[in-house]
Length: 589
Ligand SMILES: [Zn+2]
Image (tube, rainbow, N blue to C red; front, side, top):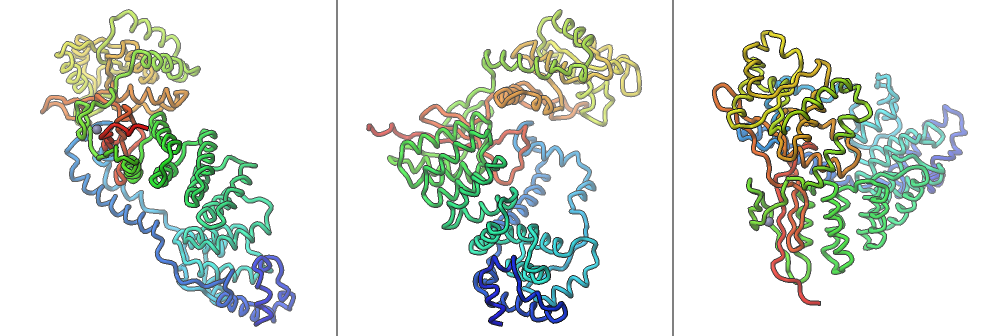
């Protein structure tokens, strides 16, 4: 045994040379497997057997959160009658639950595939041989086992016995794929010394790695004493690709953990310089670290992060919001007091009574947005795809020969809002109710709506045309560009009705500022119908009067944040806020 052990003493050798394999195949197998097994049991460094790690707390938290989400989802189904705002976080989720056929939910189940009953303790070579013999699938056995181990977060020492068995069969060589998945397990169990061992093996065997291995090594090393080597790996990575924001996150967290603020901020600058949006966790880490240091420069960097959230229409999560609150309240002099609150319909903060910024666009913002939409969405260089130039001309002169409208209605879309009614009947109900309020209406429709049919009655369409201006486009045209054109052309007061959320157009817009303005304009101008017709009067969702965005007046901050268990779609806004007030003037310098 000593002979065998010495062969493994330096673990990189395990993968390179195995002199005893030069023995004949029949005689070699048994002693070698014994060797590996004994190494598995005794060798402290590479094949060390460690006490089973505690259940991965992150995974556990995730499970708990998932269970809660499920519960919450069930609860929210029960509360479905309380209509949230159209753009309120979670509203789309609720809407989708109303319309979704419950039988559809079966799709959520993962596809069935061949699996192996994973061992729960390290196996020796004979046991692995037996397991492989019993395996009948077509896939590569070793790859399948390690993948399954990675998925189910198996114990490191069980995976290690697999690697030892593979190495034993294969001149001490373990394939890259296996090694990386083993590394993944070591990283997720926080087994730093194993991570470092694999790191050494990889350094010895490969000149450069692919991004998956770099990412794992960076993550594994950044929390260890050898965190500076994670920075070297980041440099290596930069030679061939732009590291991901997660790579930066790991390095920044490592630097902060080891009190190197300068490195942390310079990595942050580099990350933003690559036009990557930092992970919210990265930003949170700066606030968490900031609690322990009194430094004006550091503080002003944190305030810049808040402004960065504003510009990019980002919202912190719940725990990040707690970190921001804790940091403000930790500023010496106890000048700041934070509270979690909501905003009233009037736009006033329920915590401090201040008025939140208006949703209305300034005249300059409005002109800027209008110009961009006209150029990018309506013309967009591909106007033929959306409509013919002749039809666009016809529409432009139609709109320009009339005074501005108050409401532009997507006729086809509105007519389909309530599946039980006849389409022309629904459209007429909407138009009549709005016309009674003396609003100047434009109904956008398709030519087929004028051909009498079971859904489109002639008398009802005639009544629609009496109460509203109507434009009927060719049946092939897209409605949205017309809707946007007519609404924007009528001016900042003009609203529009459609069930669509115009997400495609947002994607057409050239930059973050224009997209943010479009979203703001949409929230301030899109009317949504929330209650049915026929029995009751139509009810329109009120339009938010305030803008949901990080904002400050100098001695106050208002920060919308996402609750952990509410799933928000990209076109929705959070409903919860952190209100921060300065309670006294800052002490004189
Ligand atoms: Zn407030």
